[in-house]
Length: 196
Image (cartoon, rainbow, N blue to C red):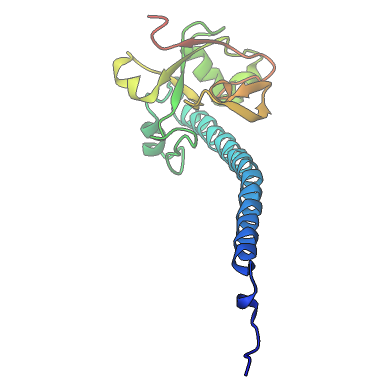
């Protein structure tokens, strides 16, 4: 008596299953190759939005600090927290260690630091008709080596090209967040170590 044939008994059936499996793996790999760049772009957009939020928090904290302490600028980001000008110290979302580059007065602005602070306390630096013309950008960890640092704000340490354009700038290290900023009149940037 003959037994009935099953699909596994047909010649070549395991070969077809292997081909179908390889095609499925190929389609999944192709889908992942398309999805990963889209996911990375979306992740970077979210980090850029977070960078803008955090940077603006620091600029506002400096404004509050100057309002509470006329004639003075914070000497460290921690001082903003200690004086209750910011709720918490935010990390740079594009930096592995979370450290920012800080924006300092350079003495090259259109007003002296004391004048900017006293005028800025009541009206905001940009509200006086004066804008900061030159800033010094230094790593946060270099603050102890700088004599009498006067922090205006922060900027990311990332030099990567951005997806979003912020204040006409296309890289994260050019997205400045500081008190007295006039987006229409970007200041001259001097980097720590270039100028004594």
